[in-house]
Image (tube, rainbow, N blue to C red; front, side, top):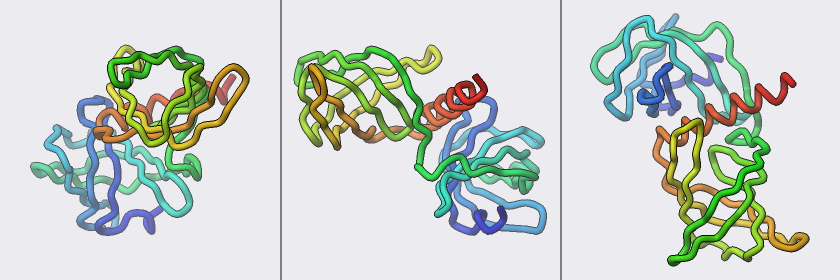
Length: 193
């Protein structure tokens, strides 16, 4: 695990409060802990539990640990006892059966979500979407409405419509982390069934 925690490595970090979601950069690595500088001014406390995740060549690494010390926008964090690689993709993808609407040039286009990740969507639409155009959408994730911009990158003709895969553009850290956590929890729930 320690070889994944190097100076200048960026992680996403969150405490039990979603409002504490931000990214951070490793600025020092010690014997039993490492120090990070937070990108945004959020409040952490000594002894508080936090989750960190980042992409590595082996996939997305995830671990939980505790805050050792707090100095303004810098945290000393204990090395985790355990960690796991979640997947080789950058983000978990979950199946989802949900109707939403895309907004494009004063037009609302109904689509059905096939799967969702923190990076984008796969949807079914009876209307052919345009590649590399920006479609606005609102997504309800656990009673929190998130606004996204969806950009189609692949479109396939399907029975009575089109299957479109695309990515989210300009997503803020808090919304991205909310999606990562939501998709991870749903993945765990589905694997237990």
